[in-house]
Amino acid sequence: MAWKPEPRRIVPPLTALAVSAALFYLGTGFTPIGLLAWLAPLPVLLVAPRVRGLTATAIAFAAWFLGSANSWGYYLDSFDVPLPIAIPIVVGQAVLFAGGVALYRALLTAGRPLPAALAPPALWAGAIFLIGMASPVGVIGPLATSQADIPVVLRLASLTGGTGIEFLVLFIPCGLAAALTVRKGRALTAIVTAAVLAAALGYGLARPLAGAGPGRTVALVARDHSPWAPDVTTPEGREILAAYTERIAALPDDVDLAVVPEGAFTVHAPDLPALTEPLRATGVDVAIGVIYYENDRKYNTTLAVPADGGPPAMYRMWHANPSGGLTAGTDLVMLPGTGDVALGMCRDVNFPDPAGAYADAGAKSIVLPGRDGDSNGRQHAIAAVIRGVEHGMSVAWSADQGVVLLADAHGRILAEGPTDGTGFTIVSAVLPDGPGATPYTRLGDWFGWTSAALALALLVAPRWLTRRRTPGSAAPGSP
Image (tube, rainbow, N blue to C red; front, side, top):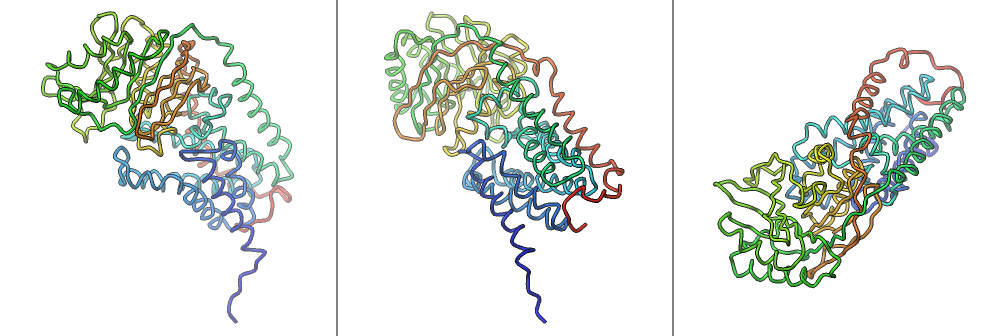
């Protein structure tokens, strides 16, 4: 007799897979609906203890993997994240989520609902943290950046780093699912889950009381889809420079600083005046991204040109892409005449430093020329905002093929505009000084290490996995 699947056995897991995948697709990626990221794990978590362990793990893997389809198009055509790196990112995140669900199921069916709820977020956040320390391209947390439009959540980063946001967004659905599934331990699990959420939101609401300084008016000026780094001495370069200087000179009188995207021009050291003199003539301080050649070396540089005639300052990107023949910089550089406005560059926000080093040096805002790949632009800008929140710095992000964005040190977006057209995009706002160094700046990656240690403890603690399950402690599921 041919085997016939029973609908009551296959419909719930398939439904959970479909719903979670759809919620991950909508709640993460480049244009996320932040609240959906909190809901996305729930269907998989609710069905996990009711199916075999291998089935639960497979459903979790498929849900995350299919949900990540929102970014596949970008990875297929990305220079910064080539396929040999992109594939491990996409598959690795799916494996990580599946591993967390497998551990959740094992602990839950062993009668340990609170450790079960802690397991997926600890494993996820701990692994994201450790991978970020080793990855050549850094890490942009998919759950943290999904909270772009919920600044009260982003502010947790000033205490825990972005790792804490990754943990929180996954812990709340895990705690809710565990409390809904078990009888024994339900109250404790629910209370702890509610307390963690209340504490995180309470901290986020209180954090802006840290205050802000007066700041300055900043304009972000981007020529959409400008060619990459034309030599400033060529006819093309001179034409683009003239277009930029015309628009910068026409900015309102109250604008103190204009920020131009990464790779706006190529400049060789002897030709530097061909760029700095026209920019100085605008009457506005300008920070601009250039490819700078000096002493047979090539640097991805943020060049700051003060309007008062003072010498320009150069920040050389710390995390330069070596495949482009770039030499990495090592210095911290402030905007001339300020002492607390840091100069950075696009790719640097994928890494903890130099943002942390700048905060230690007294920076209260950071200027970041950038260039993205259209679809990933806003996510990358939000990664910059999170770095600013981590260290109490407001952010001026000016990127071609993405977005231009101004945000305060508490994650509130002050002005924003897309740079995915063919003309100029200009936005401006008063960018207040942030409060500067935060608890996270002082304490470092305490939460990342704690998450990794907790994950390890939950993985190796045999008493939780082998203890006989108390009747009624979890919903029926095959071992």
